[in-house]
Length: 291
Picture 1 (cartoon, rainbow, N blue to C red):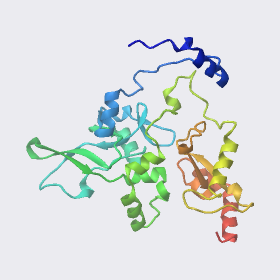
Picture 2 (tube, rainbow, N blue to C red):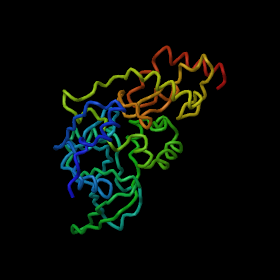
Picture 3 (tube, one colour):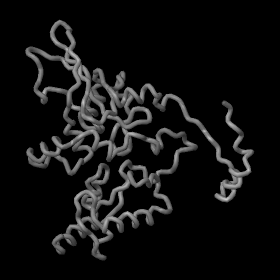
Picture 4 (cartoon, rainbow, N blue to C red):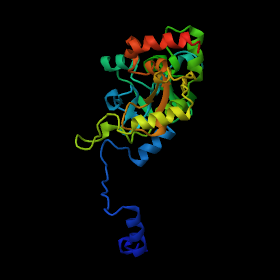
């Protein structure tokens, strides 16, 4: 079956003209080593892809990890087991979601391991337990998140300053699905995948103030992370709208979150906010109003 030439359709051309789409757009197909193939995409969400070294894994501007054009999880698949059957979860490898101190040490020492990148969101990972005489038992098991990763991302305020029970609560509740909700797998807006001529500037768009104001109004001027209400006229300036993936030109609602100044300062790369006069005035203001 051969499709008709739709440009010859008077009805469709009339509709296009009424829409103001007089000029036809240009279509540019991108491909190459920075793009995942369909087979690789399938492997990422069902199991994982072996990478020869950590050099194949990019660190994004928000500290998370990417393989080609997808944000990923990273873990070590092969685990040497000595003695009896390994069942205790705390002996299993941890998976990583950010360029934490552990991965930085691995990169610095050029540690050779069988690294695997994955985008599966159910918390299940394939692990190869290598036992005596090189026998291998492959299992799909649940792994725990690396605490250094949570600290690097300041996930829900996680830090080693917290009491151990509080840290354990955050670690136990963490899931890859939650992570990918906050840090989407699809990096369609990632400027690193564009060349110097096509990459958009990482700056706020002209309509961002209007978009931010609309979001804050729709939420009743309430922080989406800690639920602090800042609806009083004198407090509204302490409610910010943050770009989750660090790309300021991506104003998709899924990439935006309204945060009070305290929660905003807790985001990766925003700790400097705590040293500003605005932050100190904010703390004094919410203390005085007993919010």
